[in-house]
Amino acid sequence: MKSVLIAAAVGLIVSILLTPVAIKTFRRQGFGQEIRDDGPESHLSKKGTPTMGGTVIVLATVIGYLVAHLFLLGQPGRGVTSTGLLLLFLLVGLGVVGFLDDYLKIRHRRSLGLNSTAKLVGQTVVGLSFAILAIIEIGGRAPVASTSISFVREIAPLALPSAAFVLFALVFIAGFSNAVNLTDGLDGLAAGCSAMVFGAYVVISFWQFGHDCSTAAVEGCYTVRDPLDVTLVAAAAMGACLGFLWWNTSPARIFMGDTGSLALGGLMAGIAVVTRTELLLVVLGGLFVAVTLSVAIQIAFFKATRRRVFRMAPLHHHFELAGWAENTVIVRFWLVTGMAVAFGIGAFYADWLSLTGL
Image (tube, rainbow, N blue to C red; front, side):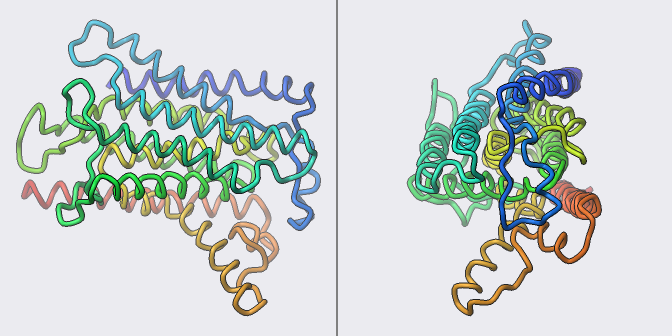
């Protein structure tokens, strides 16, 4: 448990201390946010606010994870694992894709960076690499992931062929990566919601560690790889998001940009894959799903009828244009995420209770 607290604390401290340095550096370099012309007028004042703050979140997560492992040196079975490294690869890889997108926005002084094809190619390369590595045996050990689709644990009838699972994982990772990206439209919204989801996975993965079938094959145990290492990654990411939120909350002094949103969304999906809880993430990250659906519904309905369902998509902008103050939207969306997380953890625990007969 000490190592988990260290990962979270280091992620928090590194993020909260490095973010003001990033603010000064990015402002000096002219790395300011470009604002959509068709967005709420209140957002125009945010033009020029330093962006690419996601670089701090990614760095703080990696440092938090590595520092936590310094306190596990010499303990058998507690070294850096392929599961942890694979999750960090996903975080950093998608962070790089987002960084390129942010850089092009700044360079061309417009709110559009990489075109959709280039962004999709980058997400595909990273997501495909993760998915393939997750289902192959490395060093004679069982794969990091299972090819069965899971809710709170594997669902045997939903076992997929390897190729189909790789495709599913790719779509799942790209979907949540873009979902967090779409949600990152108000000060502190994506960072606060992400911190709550990662906090949920700290609880879930640590519970799996305490009831791991490899150490105690009892009713209700979990067949997951390296659950403690997953906990360290989730804890470091949670701390990094909270530290960044200190500077990102309204009025934001820095934005995470695509560098942070793509990386955080991808990491959520990656953690869900390795903990065998893919469908549970749809519950925990229900707000991200709702925001994404609002965009899909808006586009489909407009193409079919030339009319709009929402005043503006994504969903948070609809409520702004309906007269809600920005802070009201943020806090209420945080509350929705908090309820979704509580319900998801409850469902996870209820499953364990039903299997153990307690």
